[in-house]
Length: 284
Image (cartoon, rainbow, N blue to C red; front, top):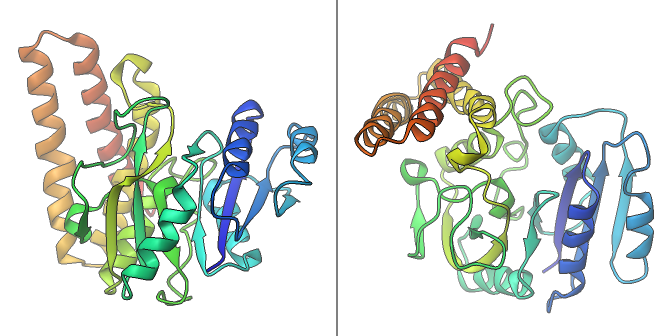
């Protein structure tokens, strides 16, 4: 079972080297790496050359930017049955690919597998939606984040397996591309399973101490993808309108007030502002 890892990258070098190093340690070797390089300055050329002899990979330089567009480009080049979209600042535990293949082999009807996202050198969860419990899940309880998702192309309609280029870094709405894809695939009946036993490491960037700008930027993508499905008269998206646009951010703001934490209050407020901004901006 061959795995294709599509790595879209722009602006990072050391993080890319760290990810490639983690791939050299994988106990499962039947995989390819497709690097979609959006840098214009040869930023990672020397790094890629260092790994040419120990990894099966293609280094593709493109003249466009956008995470979703780059990942779609990589899908067209991929030869593997399983496809994943690692971030250029994540790293894999050495057993990740072996465990991924084992889960797809064991669960015959599985279309989507989602791993746990962990802070580096820690058992603490990082970004995305994580749980200590392994479980099948639906669009009402979407798990993980895009760099923790693995897709079986044999089980997914090829016409559905693409990213919306309006979403993600470098696009109209800076975020939400992973959830948009996951919701769309779950909506048409694909089966998804989450397990925290597969560990992918990523810096914890969602914490309010890092400031409000990032939250405002990414939450616009969440509001936009909610509006996209609302425009399609998808009744099930009402759940996310209630949860993401009212209940969750307001509860977080309330808890921040009770705990007298003004930075957390500001962070939660900008989350709410960003979601509503993306909701009203979508489709203009």
